Image 1 (cartoon, rainbow, N blue to C red):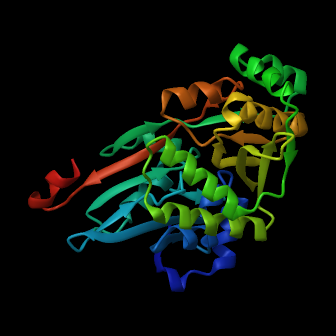
Image 2: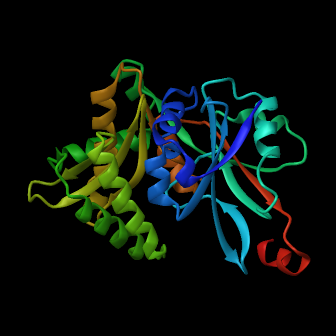
Length: 308
């Protein structure tokens, strides 16, 4: 198997993106345009004539030592292939990662489960909840928890309505405001990155912002779905202070389930390891489809302690 290491400028976008598109484990995170918007520096390993691709996102923030990391708003990367992602293929790609990268903290996609069978890797299982929509709506609704159903019924008392015209700037601003109120402090770069991703997805027909409002036209909840084949990926969402008492987010998600029921689609909730959020996603009948984070620390002794 021939594996080439290509700098970003050497990568043929059409071939790389064709591989990601037709891969059995396709993820929107693997496209060159997505990586360009979340990563400052990246390169890629390529099998043959782009039958398999493996992005390497890196920086030199550790005293000039190169490290591989998982960028913001980019949940899963790893190997994408039109061939089988078996242990042998995964092993060859991992063995071809340049040794100049002394530290790794990278997430392999859920189609790379065979990484579990490889020796010498430190792995952490990460939670990701996915809801299969290819069922009648009533069957999906029957799988909701009592709490979710109660909140959907509550929303009916507030006469909420749906909208798909919320501006990206307004959406990201509301997300930031809600996170600050919760005491969550993300770097400002996350919100700039969110803007770029949303605009790029909307431009390519690969995203939609859905929102719920009350009769006074106040925003109650909103969610940005990235669209990739059968996947509807919950990249970011927000419930406003006004919307918390109305059951707005359950209402918004239930409306999505109702509209997309009996289609070969999935809602990918993108997590979460936070117990309350995980319980909320499981409340819709979603199941955990784990992916794996690979950790490696070959830093000099005087740097290792900083990354423990």
